[in-house]
Amino acid sequence: MQNPLPKVSKRPQHKDIIARLPKKWTPWPHDKSSCNAAVREPHEAPNNKYWKKKVYWPKKPVVFISDPHADATAFEASLIGAGLAERRSKKDGLCKYRLTKVGKKTEIIIGGDCLDKGPSNLDLLRSVKHLYRLKANVTLLAGNHDLRLLMGLLAIARKKDVGNQHLFVRMGKKVVPLFREVFDQYLDGKKWDKKIPDEDTCRKKLFPGDEWFNEFPFHAAGFLTAEGIDREVRKMESKSHSFEQHCRDAGLSLRQVYAASLVCQKLFLHKKGEFNWFYRKMELVAKRGSFLFLHAGLDDTMGELLLKNGTKYANKAFHKNLQRRDLFGFYYSSIANTFRTKYRDADLPLTERGVTAIHRAGIKVVVQGHVNRDEGQRIAIKKGLVHIEGDVTLDEHSRQQEGLDSYGIGATLIDKKKGVVGISCDYPLAKVLRPKELHNIYA
Image (cartoon, rainbow, N blue to C red):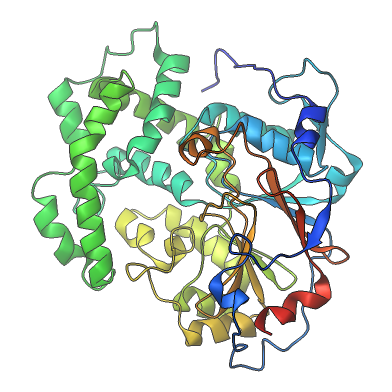
C-alpha cells in the first residue's frame, strides 16, 4: 500500500541547526548530567581479566542517533548537525537532504524507537527510508516502542490467548497518534467503515477479556519475575481503563482505530506495504570493535548467548522469533529484554556472571538509547558494565514535557582517532572521551 498524499513540510535551515550546537569541546565532564554516581565516585574495575584486554575501536567512524520518536525534523537536524547530511536549497522539505563526504564514509546506527510520541510517525519513517535510497551505511536497531506496534498488530491478527490478548492495548496512548495519522492519510474521505464491525465487537477484538487479569499471572509464572508479573498486571489495569479515552481525545472511535490498525498491517507486514522494510531491516544488536550498540541493555542469558554464538546469531534469532506464533514467548524473552530493560527488579537480571560473559565476548562498552537525558549524553556504570547513554531527547513531544526548547539535535560519535564524542543542543560543550581514557572510568 502506497501513501496517496506524501506530506512535505519545511525544515530548519543548515545555519539555524549549527547555531544551536556547541562550538567548543571539553574532556568528558564528571558532573551529574554526564556521569552516574558509579563513574563519579571510586569504583573497582570488573573482577575479571577480560576487561583488561585491549579496547578495539570501530574500523570506520560510527554515529549513533537514537530515539527520534516520530520527529523527522529532529532526526534530519541530527544528521546535519553531525556533519553527515546537508540540504541543497533553503526551500527543501522532508527527504531532500543528501549525504556529505563524511556521511558517505560513516556508519549511521539508529538506536531504535523510531515510533510513538510525535509529531509524525510516517514522516520519520520516510526520512529514514531516504537514507537507504541514498545508499548510506545504515544499521537500524530494534526499540521497545517499535516492537510494541508489531506485537499489537500481530496480536489482533491471530487467535486470542492469555499470552497475546493484552498486547494491543499494551501499546498505550503513545501509539494513538500513529493511528490518527494513518486514518487521516489513508482512510479519511473513503468508505472505510464498510467491513468494520460495530463498536462493541471492535472493543472485544482490541481489549483483553476480564479473565485475563486472573489467568495471566499463572501463564507468566516461570517467565517473568514476581515483580515483573505484578508490574505487567498493574500496567494493564491502568491502560485498559484509559486507552479508549485516549482514542476519543484524538477524535477516534474504536471502529476507526480498528480500521487504522488493519491498514497498518498492510503498511508494515505485507510484502508490498510502504513500510515493509522497517521490521525487515531491523537488527537487535551491532558489535563494532569492543562496542556493542543496542537499544536498552543486556541480561545474563543474552551475555552468554553473545559469548557462545556472537551477534550474527543474536540477530538471526531475533528475526526467527518474530515469526513465532507465540508472541508471549518472544516479548518476555531475553531477546526482547535487550530492547526493553532498565535494569529494574521487574527486568531479567544482569549479574557479575553475565558481565564476565560480555567481557569475554570482547565487549567493553554498551552504547544505548532508551533512557532519555536532557543535558546530552551520559556515561554510566550499570551492574558493573559501562554504558554510553545516547538518547538525548530529540522528539518535540518529550521536549515540551521536559521544558526543553524547540526540536532536539544530538548524536554520539565513536571513532578510533577522536574517541567518544557527544554533541547535543542541550549541553554547551561537546563531550569528548579520548581513546586512552576509557579505562580511567574505573579509576
